[in-house]
Image (cartoon, rainbow over all chains, first blue to last red; front, side, top):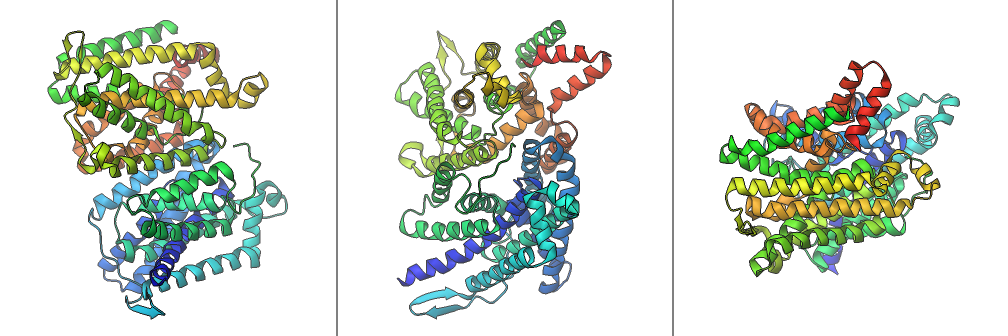
Length: 291
Length: 324
């Protein structure tokens, strides 16, 4: 039982990180039909921004802020202007190819211009093990969970309780109608790219102390985010959160209780089952889109 | 314009036959790799360019084919039989994977095939009793056909080239048949294709399964070519690479895979001057190309050809000659 609780907590922590990545992924899809195959690399990169800032002499907290700012500029604004805008008129497929190329580009850039070695990354809180009943739970897992929950709650408040958030939702649901009602659709689409950039930066800062900052990190994280988004529902923010949490917990439990060699396979099997039985995802709506 | 296309093909074939006599062993290895990868890219072009479905599993099918041959030939199975087995096995797996996956199409198929590709990698790595795990399988021997030993690099290249020629002719013939025209109809206008009575799902499934079997056949040549295979050769990276080959060459264009594979094989060599940065340059070039000319290199050439000739009708005729 004790080990079950331990696995559950660390699974929840991993799942919360997946959830952040998946939420950004679905936001981009909803407002601009961008399937970002480079989403994993988007999570890999901000950690290197932070490390570069620290190498330049900034203290950790300032480096984190610089990392988030750089990621907003590069992974938010520049990504939209340089990659997405010129290509979206050709439909979904060319953009998919282009983001695949982008993922290669970012991965190789991080390897060649920073380092091919895994870099240690400072943790948010010192790693202390806390005993809850019999289970040993690390403060790191708890801190990750706390930050992720705060981020998701803040995002939900933004989307549901503010005028800006409602305008963004209107854009996602029906861009033409939103435009008629006076919503500045283009600006709203840009905001979702900025939101995605913030989410991946937060995920990057949470995940890097655990996995170390390495140029290949994006591969597994990107796939995890796709799977989480699809399991939960491609067109729902809370679906992506649910999908991420399910995935993280399942990953940890199956590795411990079934087979660690096939650890990577369980999420994929779940993915295939969900796609076949409920393609719109657990919480998703059926989309009537021709593309 | 048909004739111009014919002349280009004739010159290219002559160059492909003459090339090994002017190249060092490493050069011959490169053009053999080109021939082998082109077969896989032709298969992916069927799925992507003609049936319009994104598959990220072609690398996995190459792996399945390579392991089939590497496991069967040491057991005494003749190469030709193992080669056919690789194609049939990939066809069957493609069918079984595609049957349910094509219920959901487009980007969902991309994710299902992505998952499949990772699953294949895990099986190849973990099932050591069968695949020897991460240690890989070395020394797949090159075949002897009717007394012709293909052990030497140049002989093996001609075997690869011969197989490539046969398979491209078969694909060409298939695409000209009513069947192949149905593939094109599906891509161009699925709604109209359905209203004309085409069973969309069956044709898409056939395109996917045949495309997968070409991936397997390519793998069947890959194993004796490199003579050492390991699971990490057939990860998602290979699938992405094959996808980029099809796109860069020009998806939906019959000769696209030939050009795309040539670029993908030669570019790293030409970009040696950029040292480790060639993948960055390549990736950037692909992004630029997608922004300005999503139809690929051949699309670019066609566009240039269309500009030279004044009546737009002529450009259409050229496309028909080269693309179908």
